[in-house]
Image 1 (cartoon, rainbow, N blue to C red):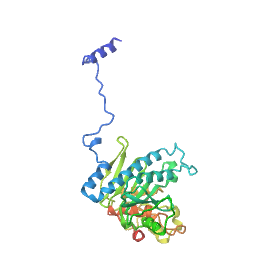
Image 2: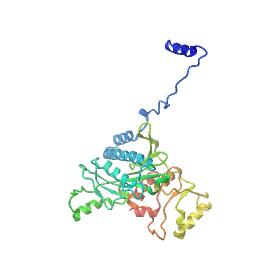
Image 3: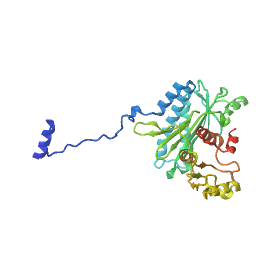
Image 4: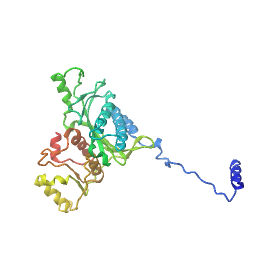
Length: 338
């Protein structure tokens, strides 16, 4: 008791006896001065700088703000997939919820006239588009079927310029002219002005391009902001990984089978023996390929003569990112984009 009393009195008068070692309280988070929350390059700050350098990006700043909000919301949704009921039979299936989140986030930007989703039968009018200039296309949640086992999944998006303003009354049947106007979402991939994806995995990463390089941002949960972690991504000239669904190899064209066999055995152009890595989520497989190099593809087969990937919602936006990193999609993919 006397020892405790001595310590209390000593503390009160600002000194400690020699036999008592002071305890130094360490901060919970040790940011150095260059990386404190107020000094990092967030996505919001990045877009402000991009707009300052190029006034053409002013409207895209509003769109990216809405997209990052949707990605944060979907990230929280995905993290609760094992807790909430998002099963295939549930009326609140997770891809449907993600689709609504994206539509609602984009609805109030005032910059979009039309959006098209992989989950919708056709283009959807955004009635709050007071000054619409763009058309958005997206796959709200790629590979959502595997979300219950913790597989990485993601959102893919692309932004086109709107060719003409669509004035449509939602409560009336669409005329032929109005239908044609909405179909302006069917533009070639070369018309994209921005594209990207959000990957939901061990961390949430947003990678996008405005046509001036590709940059990646990681969601920092301590400040609730996307922070620049992959500036000006460049795909390595040579990788050692190929990413194909080899379960379908017996249905591939012989040319694909011969090619994969060659790079596996080190008989390809590089002489390296390639290793197989295949998640089954396009966003996860593409993200790895962008950082480590290599090859990603979903070859056509007997059952899917045109391949599995959707041109408008997946192939075109991802190809836009790849080309910004000095990578090149295959000639076949380029022809499909055009």
